[in-house]
Image (cartoon, rainbow, N blue to C red):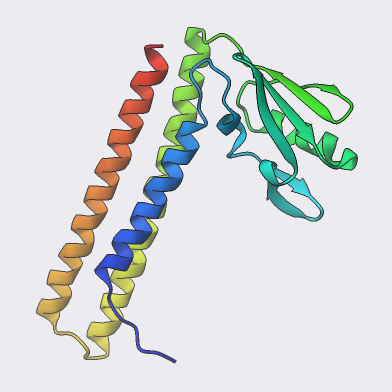
Length: 187
């Protein structure tokens, strides 16, 4: 088995990946306008596994306040409909054969607050992912020190670098969330 190595760039890359996922999820939270990305976070129980909606259907925007989901396999229509309802995006599909129509509701104050709650949930998931990366990095450092590969001083210094990267990533999550919150509440 290969010896554990500390790679701060890898840690930063993994933290950046968590931020990228957050940006993608938040881009799906539309502020009253239809967007095919709105359904990106939705996963459907299909063929014995959890699959992204875009692997089972084509999502299009026929009108500014309407989404259309063309399900490829007729046997998956009910599962897709169920997944959309379960996603708590405030969308109620009306089904015609293999096509689901989703009317995007006007954003009232209550709906805006609901979207902000969903945004907060996505942000917390990103923070947790960043903390997991930090924990992995710290575990590697502990092992390296225990095995005598690095000194206690090196451990402390590298520990600080990992913590600094974590703090920067968490701050960026908070900035992204604040910007999205403002966008949702002022449209």
